[in-house]
Length: 140
Image (cartoon, rainbow, N blue to C red; front, side, top):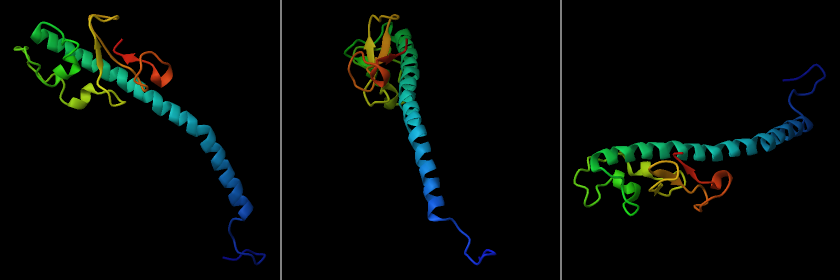
């Protein structure tokens, strides 16, 4: 397609470079914010999952008249532990329900610091304490 002056219509190299520079600036500004949001979503997910595990633990206690021991852990919610004849589970449908977003099983603290039992994850780093995504997350 020709313009009135005889040149073909289209974008110049300079115009394309300006558009690419603007897109690069937007990516540099928005990218870290999106990554920060995605990281915090794992912590939020872990908190919700820990509350679901805590609710399942209460059902376990209704049937077995006790919480699982530290040795039995949260695995007692999906597979019957020995010496629990009144087990009426599984209390959680899938094995993945007892695994935190970082791939480790949720931990129990009996007696809990925030209730009878605490369900928690050690966060992204797998170590006690921490800040940001590395902080401990639980049902409290």
